[in-house]
Image (tube, rainbow, N blue to C red; front, side, top):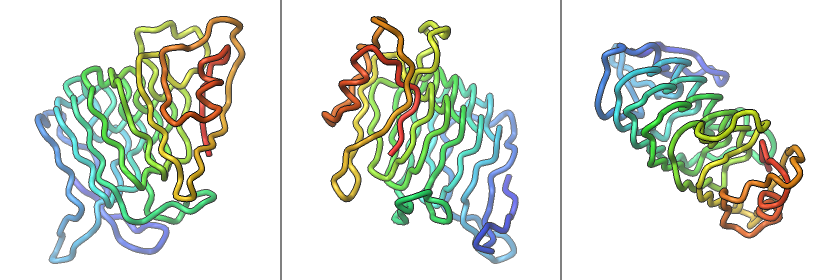
Length: 223
């Protein structure tokens, strides 16, 4: 089900609204939909749109700008999510007003079968708890991404009383450098003595790796 909406650029786009709770199987969201002989970009998945459905695989188109909160939360049969890249890049500062993708808080939380996640260039941010509880074991963060929120890849098998952490499972994260070649990320953390996270691995060799493997609990990174 779609609803037409006029965005900040005064362009009509199509938003995916509430779906039938009986939807199952593979879902490939189109780039465009046609209504009364007019074609509209599909740019937003509203909050709770596919929550608790039995979809198994998902493809997100390059026209998408927002996957809103809890859009796919508790899709417990979902095993694979693929985002298509967009050619339109975020700005160097806020990224607002561009065709970049934002994945909101808890968008895919508790997708307990989600193993394969393919993020793509054009992603600007992932919100708090975006993929919490998903058994993903490796992910590539594209160069366009500017922020990864707290608890983003946190495994629910771990103790949740340990304050906010970005992840606490065996996951290999590749942080691609920006177009200028920068690999620098800033971070927020809490100090937890000798209870370090040693099972979250970053591949780009920057300072954040050393911090992550020391006595800090990282709970958000940004650049």
